[in-house]
Image 1 (cartoon, rainbow, N blue to C red):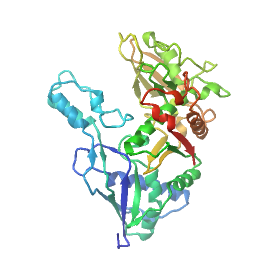
Image 2: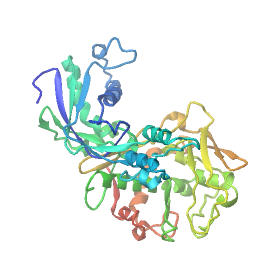
Image 3: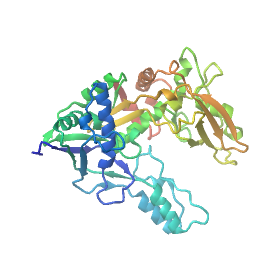
Length: 443
């Protein structure tokens, strides 16, 4: 316990593995250099909301606004780590090809970026260097780590302490933060155990920014961080792009809620996946191959909206259809997305999943105004390339809080089909079975 009025000692508890770019270094853990700038931005937002101006809290010599305090984080034990980097290096040293399954072994399936593309003339050392540069592994500390804040302004230090618990509840760290990786909470402040109720913290904070917040819960609480990440991946899949395991079980097809959202609205729009199938892809990649009994529903009109962009997009995806007797003679085309407005690049997800010891929170973030009503060009790498334009919904066409509430209602209904022939209660594939007992509860 700190006895100095200019210092605060805190204990951080880690709840989910963190994808760390320095995973191979001794003592790799949450870094003060990652926490401090984000905590500053969070505190500046709170100060603005409270009409609080404190120039004396700032670092005068900083080229950008920064609050005058220091952060140090120390781990107390050796972390558990995945070893995909070492495994991949050993594989290329033996002259064997890399395996996507081995590249992500032990890491939740919502992370799939451990990939490299060796060139024809690459030496073994070239391949190893590319692996080290591209691969990430997870680190997880079972024991609490110490976070120390030193601040010579006691008024600022008190203000920081006042907001730390909600800061860590609403921020994850490392790579793939939005999908629950790198969740931490405060366990102790100056030796005193935290007594805050996280549901109350989340409800109050999100009521202030007028967004709904949800708790994802099962019949029992998640047994560990990896199970929490598995549940998050499941729910987000049902929300956005859906699940298709028909190549294993013929009826295990669930179209993502985002893709079905406009089918029953007053002004029905077709979705971006339908746009790609009907307007961009040709030949063997057209809709319906091998899936004649499912996924055929469309909105009544001929207009399209890029609704999944509102939930975050990367700049490209590989189009893959799963099923028996498919013709792969032309390979898998890559679909690229490019906004006609140069100010918009990769779109991060506006949903953050935050994990505590016994709760999983779905925390919405504000969607930037600039994303609404924007035109995107979607291009396929088929030869010759095919492209077309589609725009995102306007604010009048997409109410984010309403969308989330409708999704929760849809997900909690386990009996109705989700674009296929069965409801979640009848799912057969083991990868999806946990969805039967999961529900979303709005706070």
